[in-house]
Image (tube, rainbow, N blue to C red):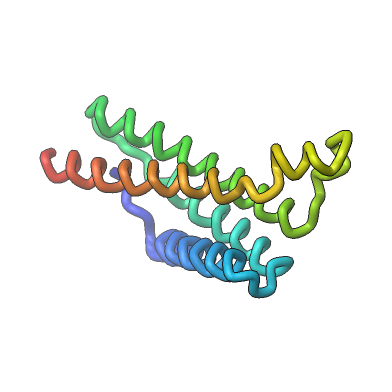
Length: 134
């Protein structure tokens, strides 16, 4: 696995911290219009740096796990976009009525974040286990 340099590691850790702060404050309804953007910026920092960690080996298992991690990264970004929409109602105009918007999009960031977090925990644990076998 390609190691991140010192600056990339700092960006990666700051992105993760912003994600935690943003999601926590948003869930507790503290400055929602601000922390949703913090979460989205943190998500972008985290996912870009995690994508920079390229696996250069031949293990098919680790390659598969990195692809699953890429899906988790995509879900993190979609959760951030959905969180920003929940705070600002940007996508409400794309629906015919408010009920459809509330049913299909409003507050769905929670589901996306949960799925992404589960995939991230699983892949991180399995990748570290597989790398220790090499």
